[in-house]
Length: 573
Ligand code: TEU
Image (cartoon, rainbow, N blue to C red; front, side, top):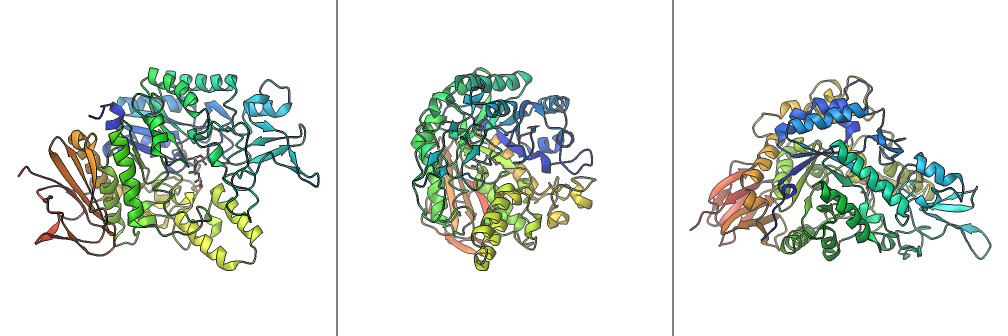
């Protein structure tokens, strides 16, 4: 018997504020814009809104570099706007999640400025400082060989103190030292401060990276041509992670708050169960990266790799079954502000197939076991930035740093440059960050000014105004999926999950079962018809939802049309 909890029954809508809605015409989305669109969000049928960081920030990494935890960046508005937003959400029965980034701060944060100022400042120990190493020629080297996720070494040298500080992300994002008790207290105090303000919970940025192996060992060298290496084995779910998460979890639990932790580079479900196990009181759920890393090639995210249906099936099956059977819980997602658009990445964004594919993915994801996360624009079937856009249109530091490094290291390798550019068009984070498409008016109704990031060319055919209330639209389809979860909580939230026809290369099918009731969900991931032999124990009895009019069946064979998806409930026979 699975434990019931309100956060298991909820669905979440994620807002990337810069690109959501601009209310003052400066070209950046803002809090006023979010407030304007609360009824839209309510109509969709979600229960919780997760807002990406709006804290004061130099915006080197779009707000994931926080310079003050208790101030709002002027780009987004004021603290009054936050209060108004919380009140507006609560008045509609919606809950509010802040995005909390406490693995690192901005280098402009007062804590870091103090820490940097001298070796004996009381804040020195709030960040991770280490002495240089020296090679056999006496040349100064960083303390170890770890790479930063945004390029180069993970260590930055400070001449004044002759020490390096650690930054797993950009050099303007120094890592906090969780070994330091005063620092932890300050973080916990911040968490309480926001909860007291009326925030209902947090999405915790890279929260599994906070505990590092204190001997800071070198990373294993997988590619000897690279100067720096992925050191995650020494800090992803590191030595003291559960201790810290229990301290944090105790506070969250005392407020009955919602928590979802971002947890890259850990795929061991036993380890994750220690975080999300119902009785562990660490976090409610985490984002794992197995699906979204499926098409990352051997040389990293921006190298090509074809994914196989069998990969997807074993990943989904693993998490669904393991968590269900062991008192854990899943966060279900395909998109967020770091991931490209699903229709373009794994299906088709052609005029003919885009909306079918969007609805197929809604069926695939939305009827699984877990809490559903929808990212702004996903409910409209928004697609990646168009192929003809040049490098000058890209904005994200991850892509831009990667490109600069590539051009520097391999200036003459034109072929690699072409391949890599294609990969940006498939996987760059920028694909998710183009402004929200509200209408077919100028700038897609996102802003009256010049948008900070170019609006996707598709806005005339893909926008909210042409979808809300329009039968057959991706928006209305998502709305129906979320409503179905609510109407049939026992099956869709608490029911058992089973993969059907596990070997099939084209059809992703599963059942959800609760106390003798079974729903069959089937999705054709291909752009063409697939004849699927319905397993004999299953029947197409009563149609719950489909992106076509219902299945076409002949003598036990279902002809599944391009990107067709459906759910049927079985009658008792
Ligand atoms: O992301 C961390 C992360 O692990 C990756 O998804 C990262 O964004 C990148 O795509 C690796 O290829 C979180 C935030 O979601 C991201 O926006 C921030 O840039 C990052 O942490 C640093 O705070």
